[in-house]
Image 1 (cartoon, rainbow, N blue to C red):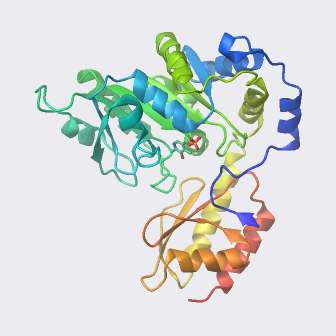
Image 2 (cartoon, helix red, strand yellow; image 1 turned 30 degrees about the vertical axis):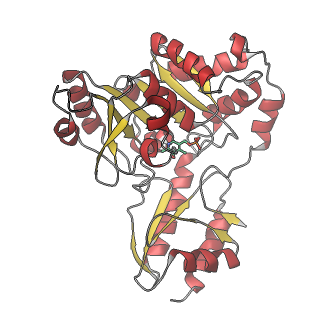
Length: 339
Ligand SMILES: *Cc1c(COP(=O)(O)O)cnc(C)c1O
């Protein structure tokens, strides 16, 4: 089976498993797991931020960030397809009693002027606008990348209006590998940054929240409340350290394969449109007389898996376990499906 459903489907490489098996561990709820501490310090340093917190999932890091940057009844500005709104089970409403102010960006990328226009006046009728959530790369936008200049402009608007700024950077390293920008250029701009190790970086579990010391102290308390305090988590953190050291540069390969897949798809009779392929996500729009179910079933019969991504849309995600040989097989299968 060639699994292109997500970049979360990868299994640890032998080198990663080795690092996990040899990890030195302790009880992280007592703050005494040396491998977790090393990972947290390493990520904080990478982003030029003070502190970091290891968490079980990207959803949890986002949920913790929203909790520590807001008060109940506050409002969060984000794109209508943002993971923090669309894919976290309504968590912001439940965990932090927030309401979203949805805006529609260009393939999920919102602008400074959209943010500015969305801020509520200081009037008891309106929820207090307190947080802006950015997602880079943007999953629903097909792995689209923000322009750093726009992010700086958003930061300025936030400063002027006393808004906090969170980055859902589940796939931030995919963006950095494409643009050549550095993590610390993002550390400068955001109050909190969430990054995932279980996506393109290929670890089995783990996300890290990065921020200043005070916010991370608060985040640690909220992580416990959410049930995310883990004990000998160093075994997992070791995989993340290994991923930072070995799996960042190779994301460029995933992007190359995704671009190739996008080019092939563009020439298929049953494809109306392919979203621009900026990183490792390929979104196809099918012609009117073809359904997602039809393509997914046809592919499944030929041992390829993808996911539906809205009406008429199919998503493929390239990753560590998708080889060049798999790419050729996928090309062969796709080119033999007639409409
Ligand atoms: C995957 C993902 C997350 C977090 O997902 P988990 O499965 O909870 O780790 C958050 N944001 C984006 C954009 C994602 O793609």
